[in-house]
Image 1 (cartoon, rainbow, N blue to C red):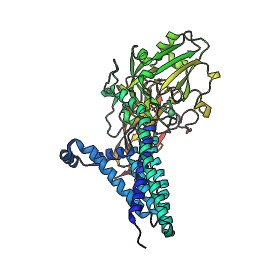
Image 2: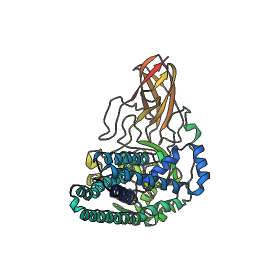
Image 3: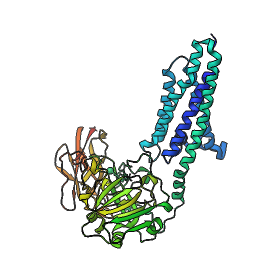
Image 4: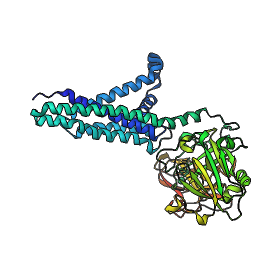
Length: 506
Ligand SMILES: Nc1nc2c(c(=O)[nH]1)N[C@H]1C(S)=C(S)[C@@H](COP(=O)(O)O)O[C@H]1N2
Ligand SMILES: [Mo]
């Protein structure tokens, strides 16, 4: 029997279009990013060799990006058509097409600066749509194959389903655009925001120990680790933001964004840590923060002597309790409005977050913060402490080997070893490395502007040919030596020496 391929192609193309629409709508509503198709276009631009890209751009001028996206869309429609044709004989083969495309999309999304797992959701939604829609469309076509006598009825069913889905796709994409407009507008507000007094210094030169391959002392915003429970990142316009300070205070205060940024600004280098950072892990970053000292604001509202903490709440309902002592002593605990000289990135808490040197983020660094309740630890419960994490969260002393990487092959003889060490708000006094459990050898330390940042360290060790184990430990400025006892991140941060294996060749 001669079958009309056209409708199978149409089925695949419609499934593709509906999937692109749901994926686009998800990106608009849940994320602050463009659709995955744009991520793929950006990846292609990135990996296209410069000379070719230049020639192409000269050829098509300003149209390079729209043309690239059009090309990707045409390619996707062709893939949809192929999936439709393949579904005549197989249910697995079209699935493979969807899988490969979803993998490519996820890869492109995750390679974007500052990408988060949530940013993959649009790809996932598109994939599920493809998988669900294609069989719905091919069902009448299959029915027609088995019951030729019903052909004209099934043909009508097919046309109706395809038409309805096409219309739905337009509706979904349009609705996503409208719903997502508010979110996207915040990105624009942030871009246009000018913050008087926010400076953007270079990392002081003496903070670098000068060993190639080390992580930079200053972490760029795009590389800064991200931890939050919110699925859709809160998007708050500065003009709509307020912080209510209440509870055990003499005078309740509600600050607007302008009230806040009109105050005197404090700026400092502060390293932020996640309590979930494993030994040797990278959930830690160092930035130049600009904000308003919390201690000054608390002095204004007047604290009841019985209070011992502030229950901080963010716009998305996440909360944590922070000891008042850390908010009122001489450290630079601040309501931060800028990170590395730029308004806070949306994912990092725009427009205002708390930063407290020396405390893990889960007990202090509330992003999108909107409420401070001055209260007592005995009466509060907060997101992570309800889940078994410790009420107190001072950062533990830690050190990490970044060069060489664990498992690396190095040349025997003199080998440069280096990394980072931190003990925020106490400071690092010394770092030592031991080879194969031998004597601890002192490393050289770079400088730091304060005790609130990590420090780069390096030394040269002698390695005989063969396999070796390197470990590092630090000592803080109070004389506390980092313990070698291995402890899990739960309930109050990991301990233990970072230990790596290297192999030295002749
Ligand atoms: N609103 C909100 N703020 C939050 C969190 C969160 O889940 N929601 N996570 C905290 C944790 S556990 C850490 S380690 C830091 C991480 O900050 P970053 O994502 O800017 O690196 O934010 C803190 N602030
Ligand atoms: Mo964290």
